[in-house]
Image (cartoon, rainbow, N blue to C red):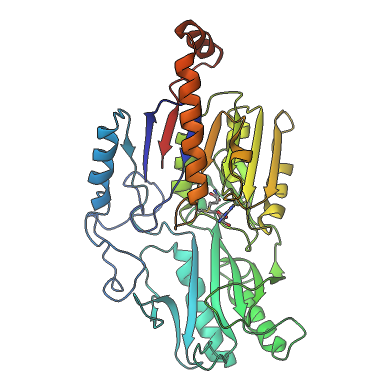
Length: 418
Ligand SMILES: C[S@@+](CC[C@H](N)C(=O)[O-])C[C@H]1O[C@@H](n2cnc3c(N)ncnc32)[C@H](O)[C@@H]1O
């Protein structure tokens, strides 16, 4: 993960946020879990699995040099890079379930194919994720659960999503990460709980709960959910979610706030890196500013800066309506002293984006992998050029006065890459 602050000629702060999947695994300074002595991946699945793209020097990914040069050329002086954990960093995984009930395969597709590679010993996964995968395989074999067959569109279990919560104040802080518990979501190939086969789903979730729930010796499972999906396309989740066992609410402590994440909401995969990213990002948000968080998911970035930077207003824009519940739950746990106008809007950021951007001092953009929508890029460019014009037209004395009203924030404007 890299963080940089650069000055462009605009009076608005634009924050772009991205957590890299393959290049930001561990930290040498982490007290939590010892890793191999070198910074190589040392994963036996590396050749066949598409999950990781680099095997050596994980603390110095090839993109680092390119990024450093980019920021240097742009005149950025405080570019920093933090690799965080190199192993066991992934706290959220969506894995396909294929193969047979005697020989299930649980993992990722081989590059460019729909052939699933079994990755029981993945080095990037949090250890509780690998432990749940192992339990799930036992359950599939014992209960004769049929993995999904994409060609025939038959079978029962299509995918499993696992998210680890490390939030448990009843155990010592130093042990919380290692003892993280997993919110399990089983993607089941039927329409609803009224469809045939529901008993098998119940039997599987009971099996997992018995072996990994609070009464088992290991307690690695936080909760179990099901998502019903019968579509033949590649979309992992259907629209119907049901909570089956365990605690319904899933909490994590990130960026100085308690955040709730339902399985249907987007969540960052690298919890520790995301926390570190937010703590850096907060420093670039001027106190009391008005912030818009585009592509906000459950609004974690917006809520985190609302609290830590005492923002005047925060608007979160997100296309997935399922994220709203998580946003509202997190909002309800903010300190009562927070005096900010905070709102979450179910909207497509690419439609008339200027409408959301106008009047904001800080713009956070954290788009999906495909990147920013063209219309958002145009809107940002328009904003930059119109503010540049306005700044040029103003007298330098006026600029100075504005600077003083907003300590630590220069009229020059800032762009943060993470
Ligand atoms: C990389 S995630 C970031 C989520 C959030 N910032 C976080 O850290 O948890 C990208 C988010 O953008 C949302 N999204 C995708 N296209 C969108 C659009 N056109 N308008 C608004 N949100 C969109 C996705 O649903 C997803 O929640």
